[in-house]
Structures are given as C-alpha cells and as structure tokens.
Image (cartoon, rainbow, N blue to C red; front, side):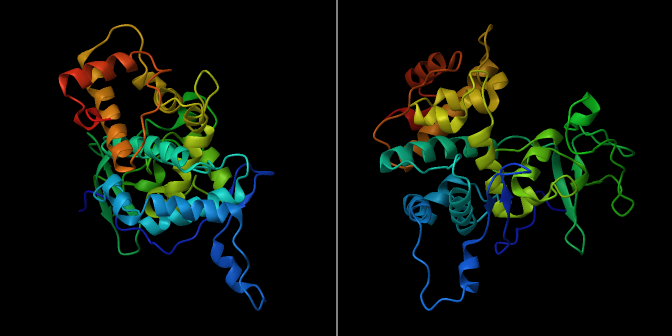
Length: 322
C-alpha cells in the first residue's frame, strides 16, 4: 500500500491540441533530432522565452515550491511542458511576458496556487499499484461495492467523459481502479469529468479512459495546470493568466475557485483560515522569486480584509516583509 502515486516516468512525452479541430499541437522539442540537417535549427523566440523561465525557476527554487511528497513531478518535466506549451499555443502562452519581472509575477501567482493545491485533501487517501503499474485507490469512507464518483458530471446531466458507478476491484478488495474516477489530479487539481473531457481534447490524449495519466506523467500534469490557468474563466470573463497581466492576484482566485475563495456574506473563521493559507503561499512564492511587490489583492470578495487581518495578526508570516 502506498499513500501517494508512484514516481512518474520522467521521459514520457505529450501531445497537445487546444481544440479538437484547430488548436496547435504540443510536441517534444526533441523532434528536431530527426531532421536531416548539418546544423541544429535556431531556437525560436518562444523556446528562448521558455528556457529563460527555467533560469528564473531553477531546480532549487522549483523543488522549494513543488512539494515532492504530493507532486512527483520533476523540474525537467516542468521546463519541457512550458517550452512545448508556448511553442504551440500562440494565443494562450504562459509565463511569456517580455519583461522579466512580469514573468516573475505570473510564476509567483501560479506557484502560490500550486502550493495551496498540494495540501488539498484528495478523494483517495490510499493507493495500491499492481505489477503492471495500474493504480487502485481507496476513496474516503468507501466500504466496498459499486462506488458513485462525486466528480462524475454525467450523473448531474452535464457533458463530460462517460462515467458512472465504479466497481470494486476483484484483485484488491476495498479499492477502485483509479482510472475510473475523476478526482483532483495535477498541480492545480484538475477535477470533474467535464474538465477531463476538455483537457483530453486539448492534449489529444484519451484522458477519459486514462485520467490517471495527469498524475503519473509530469508533462501531462503540468499541461493540465497550464490549461486551467489560461482557459478557465471567472464570472467576469477573466482567466488567471489575464488577471495577472492586469496586475490582480485576487483575480486568479476568482478565476480558479471563486465559490470557495471569494465568498460573500458571512465572514467565517474557516474561510479566513483557508484564504490566509492561500495568501501565505502566494507571499512565499513571491519572496522566493524576488518580486518587487505583490500584485493587487483585489477582485475577490473579502480577500483584502483577510490580507490586512493576517498581516496585522502575523497569521500569514511569509507576507510580513513584502
């Protein structure tokens, strides 16, 4: 029995399409090795920008912001995913600002979210891997028999990967084949079968039958997070990436998880603790990446109030000196 996923294959490659019909395909840059040429091709501006991202986020910084106990992805996979995404997704590039400090601002906001997501409680708390590498999980409070996946959007009348009651494993009683479930995986916890269907179309990979690839293969995992960052919109029609470009950190929370992070009405202690954690993670990433200042703490109900309170009370220590 293991309590986290096995170490993914760091050499795996991924292909990405932003829509089923016309978005560009993400490919490994190693494809250049097969070209018949006396000299290697010159790197494109996209590759230069993406390579510079991994000089900003070197391996030391990366592993301080990506907890290895919850995300078994390598620095090399992150760098390859950034290069591939930006080389082939012209309208949704990530970390591609022409000014280095703006790149650092987006990286800090992004990795702040990654830090927070890494502590989120998963639907599955225990895992078993068979001799063929297939992963089985034990959902929280599961007692056996058919299991109803709470992240199956089909059961709620929405589009998504085909899903339904998942049978108990005959090989490992008390466990469910992980590929039957659509719980949160990856750096930003891709969840729900309708989101898996959309990212499957983006990646050009059948994640409906193999959702576990998001957890097991680093480049697919990072690509899922880049898709969330550049495609999921708030009620104001802003993605997290656009919010950063407009100078708003609060807008990233509103885009990714507004129902939990941008609550209106009663200001509860539970809400304050959750948002304080988000703010402290952002400040840790901002400090690690040597930001000149924080983005605006706005565009998210009660966020500024929480920020002022946690700074004055010392409950977000990473924010004290920024």
